[in-house]
Image 1 (tube, rainbow, N blue to C red):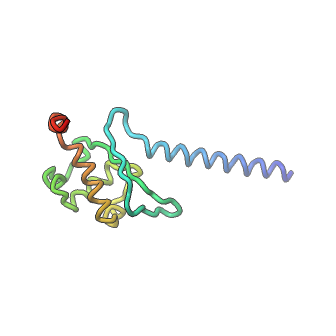
Image 2: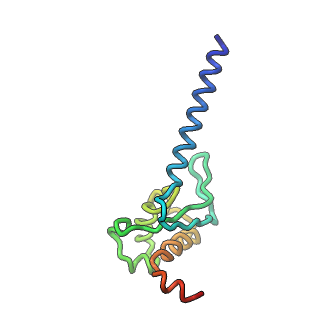
Length: 127
């Protein structure tokens, strides 16, 4: 009887672990072909027992930029970054987390975002 209960407990833990791993895979996956940039955080975020040491920023589609001025994003307007970054980061940041980021990390994330706004022809001229 005890063995059966232990087996059920082990199976439940295994199922829960698989569910967590699957959820993590879904949150880190981005659409194929969409450019991303991984930004290591200077000051990691603490989410419960999890420490977030890096954020993946993906190239936003035009809908991800709704409600903000592109000029504000390009000028690193903090309020605009607070709105857009939660829409394009993995793991998804909340607006509250973006507001509590170390300023260096906010600038790094904004720089990654701005990098997606530069046309390829201007990036290639540096080569």
